[in-house]
Amino acid sequence: MSGTLVVAEARGGELRDVSFELITAAQRLAEQGAGPVRVLLVTGGGADAAALGAAGVEEVLTVASPREQFEPHLQAE
Image (cartoon, rainbow, N blue to C red; front, side, top):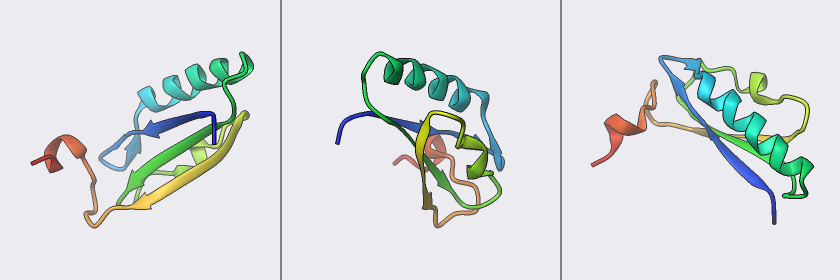
């Protein structure tokens, strides 16, 4: 499967602007033939995954976190 996978970021239940910036960059790559854009969001709830489904995004994937607020920089061991 080719294409670009964007790992979206949420903090405090809100999607971060960097997620949308990365989606835009991935869409530009898709226009140049890089394949479809997919977005992954790890969430414990609160963040609106549907907001990531902009035009040009083929699929939005969500992974449930065992924690209400998943913040990878705090979870790393």
